[in-house]
Image (cartoon, rainbow, N blue to C red; front, side, top):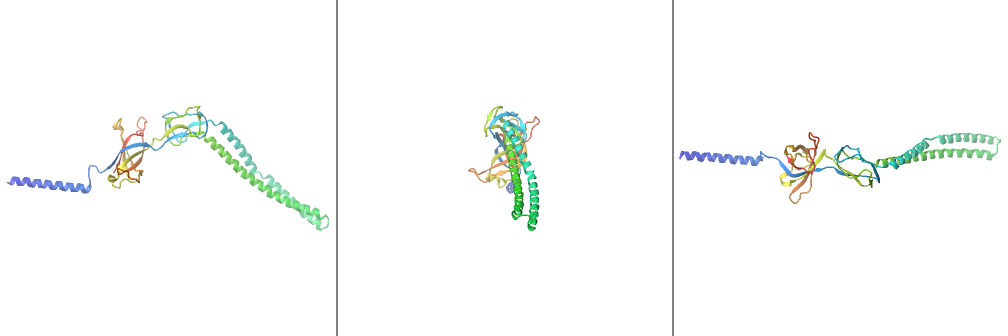
Length: 303
């Protein structure tokens, strides 16, 4: 009997201990996996652009091939710019002429000198008229000539202002000609990778004709969904997360990085999920290949 009592007492102690452990777990949460995971995520491009031609013409340069890395501002293609260059030289000459006219003060100085001379003659003839040495109409003629000389100063000043305005107009025309020349240079909008070359050297292109597909690989976007219930308020822009990208060809090459949640949809879908995405920096492996590629599966882990 004593033996059975000891057994029952031991079982009661074990049960009490298990109940206490369950209560502690319920209060603190699971100690083995406290994270919320957004699965079924995939890697997407942030930037994938078909670079277009902006003007009509023949492609005379096309120094790109598929698989090339390019930097922002690198030349991708050149449309024949002969007429645009000639137009620019013509506009530069017109601008120079307008600049010289705007800076020319010879007419204004001449008008001021003539006005000074005419004013002195008019004063002399007025004195002679007062002394009776010259008739009235001669004196009046000199006074009117002095007034005309004063008006010629106003005219010269107005002509100078017109010349300055014409110079501004010619400068703007030169800038437009430079812009038209620059439009024939098709350049990379950002650092990227030539995913596809569409046009061919010597091809005649129209405005909007695609030249090449340029993608950004140094920074990519991981897009997925997360349960509105399981996230428990953790899904917010700026929240720290861990992103894991799976390499199906070589699991040892799975990519993991820390990041911040970039976007949380304001709408919950029919399955009570938010749409979220995270932008991550990409890295190259020892062979110079990007470790993360669009289309790979991934997951976003909320700590």
